[in-house]
Length: 128
Image 1 (cartoon, rainbow, N blue to C red):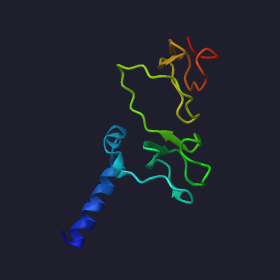
Image 2 (cartoon, rainbow, N blue to C red):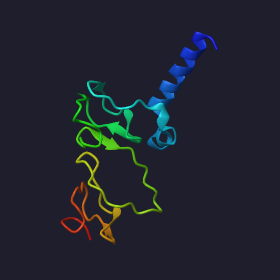
Image 3 (cartoon, rainbow, N blue to C red):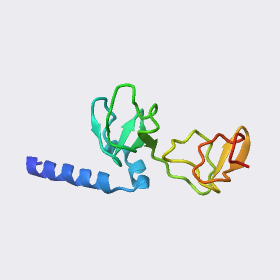
Image 4 (cartoon, one colour):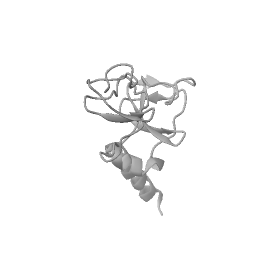
């Protein structure tokens, strides 16, 4: 393969990576770069950290202690909700809350969010 062909293939993959839906991105996570500290990240890009795909929520320069799993104001897991499966509750970031009618399981029970923008734990507020 010639260098020009390789460059064209890489450019095409980057274009596809950036225009992919979340569902398409989850099907090919290897196309996405690994998270690194001291890196400028722009809102909306996706990256991998500990084999989990994340989306950047706001522009920032990463720091060693701002990993995607530890900085929910900067990153959100890329999740495709299967309408046939009720997921286990996990604390959402403020930028990706549960909406009225969303269902989760928690502590052996199924809960329904009674409010939009719900970040409360089931049983505390906003769930029945």
